[in-house]
Amino acid sequence: MISNVVNRRIRHTWAIVGLCAAATIVVPGAARGDDITDWNRAMLRSGLIAGTSPLAMTRVSAMVQVAVFDSVNGIERRYTPIHVTPRGPRGASERAAAVEAAYVILSRTYGTQAVVPPAVPTAAQFAQQANLDARRIISQQAMRDRESAASIDAGAAWGQSVADEIWAWRATDGIQITTPVWTGSTMPGQWRPTPNAPVSETVFSGNGAGYPQFSNMTPWLILDKAQFRPGPPPALTSAEYLAGSRGSAGDGQLFELRSHARSNDVRLVLCGRHRDIRVE
Image 1: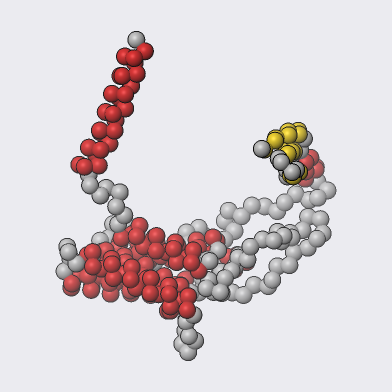
Image 2: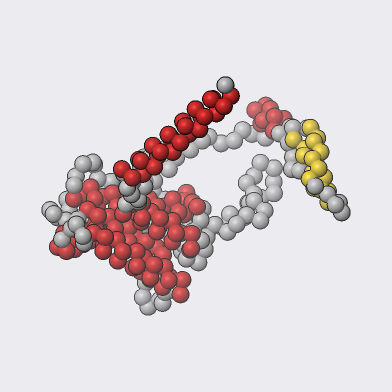
């Protein structure tokens, strides 16, 4: 009886494996990324190399995606444009437009185009530009098997023009406004910086990469920066603040480690309860 059940389960398992293998054969390359995902990957890699802060990366991503969207949507109009309203040239390659739009924004953010002459790009910016140039060559070569050179050139030119408009549009969105340094305060109820917090800006991220500038930046979709801004915190002398502080007081503390010669005793202090864990 048991052996029959085991045999049925084995046959069932191999049937699933066979179906998965058959699906892989019937639909070859189904998981292959397209030009959009390829350039999303290039964007994330560039931001990682440059050390762009997560908050600043949201703006870079938005600029790339808007430029790509408006360039493709301009050739085959299906949706309302985000910013660039003119239509692209008839017969232009949508793939070439998308690739060029992403390439231009990333080159101006991380590559040699991020530097205004007579300033000289850094070695890191030259390296970033070389990576972007190589990625664009690979993308364009993949198009030439199915699209004409004229279509690719027209799409690339259109993608360049759309990226130029997106770049000019967001150049005055308030991100470049220099804000005062927020030193914080040690007074009760006042904001204070987190000790040992990582720097929110790097050399390659440029001006506007820090967090304070985002308070001045024009939003992408919402009507106003304060549209969903929460109200002020309760006063320190209010009953609401007292109730909240009492509730958080029992949420627990950090754990402590006590090292010994041959083992570690880990004491967890959580919600007022102690638990000793011995790790051999």
